[in-house]
Image 1 (tube, helix red, strand yellow):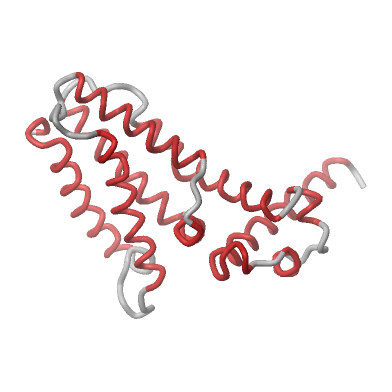
Image 2: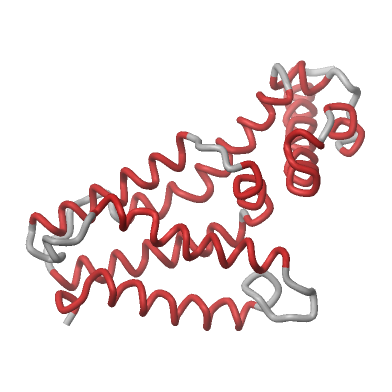
Length: 206
């Protein structure tokens, strides 16, 4: 067998293990998802998690690392530079919230794992630190109320968006929510972006 064929098979198996881990961790929790059951769901031998990830913990970490990149990379790039004007601050804040929400919808099963396990991870700190730096830069530029406590604001967006994801995942299937109804999701996002941006940007956005 050629080396490139082996590499492709390895990549496919690793992907199946990650996807099986996402499903079972979300359904049963970290403790309730056994290595044996994850490998069975991935159609892999029971040694493959240890081969590719070292342990069940290593698989969990790989899932969270993938989630962090898929969820936070784009939103954080949008606010990487300090805002120059009130309009720039408002526009990039709006895009940041929008992209974060859409990424959370795409990554809803993994976010459910995080909500269930209540574990901190590097990606979450990166999100909060990047958002805090943007808000602090806005304060320094006079675009954000100097009395606002940045450390209390950084969790506001993720909590509001994340709580909606968790609620949707546990609501009845026949009830429209942000995971099963695209039109509902866009309406909810529009209303909440307006509320959050107005609440943070205030008069600076006018």
